[in-house]
Length: 138
Ligand SMILES: [Zn+2]
Image 1: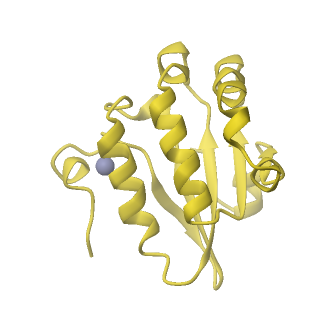
Image 2: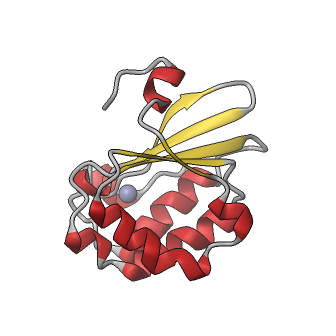
């Protein structure tokens, strides 16, 4: 299986990992606040694209953890735009935002014009997702 070469050399560079899977759904988790290379635009998009190309017909949900998400993350507009592109291209089912913060809202506001109504309706602000999936909150 292909994997991100940067994270293979230096684990934790990016943050996008499969944390749960059912018969029909794959759940990916991202916490920009824990990614050492949070501003590596090309690497982050490549990493996500590689992972999403393994879906094999399954649907997917994205859990975006705002823990540690600060101004420096909110200002990475290029990454936000790139991710919106992937969310549309790979047709995300639901986006769960946990540990919502003011800076998460800043990025959300910046990206608002790029989000289709369909994509907006996918976003759920809810920390209960971990409990729902029966996994320990990371
Ligand atoms: Zn990576």
